[in-house]
Amino acid sequence: MLSEKAKDQVVFQCEVQHPFTLGEIEDLLVTALEGGSNYWIESVDSNPGEGNVYDQAMASGIVIKPIDDDSTYRLNMLFMQMGMQIMALKYGESVRRIIDGTYDADDADVWLQLSLFARLVYG
Image 1: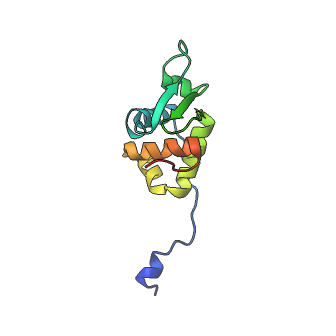
Image 2: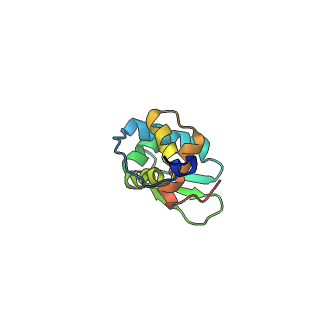
Image 3: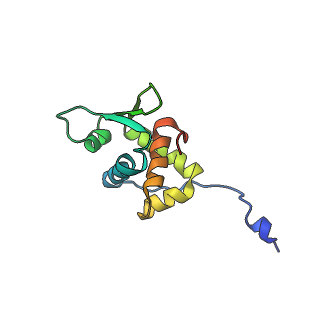
């Protein structure tokens, strides 16, 4: 019989497939930009006349500038998917909350940072 300590030992990870809808990703992005990530974002640039920021992020992408960085970072669907994949590997509990709709602004912030930087930089 395994000891209690041995039972808690991680022996492998697996990837779970989940089809994210545009609505789910847009809601997550709204939560990040309007709540979870606004402490480190200086500006979000989009193209006037091409719909709102969220529609543009889903289509052609938007540009985000952090407060303490002279660089800008493009966010588009490919980077959002990459961020979710990294999150699944490193922050599985957060992905579970995103999938079941119980995520919070902190989970959305982690996802946005992973989408832009491929790692957590803030917070």
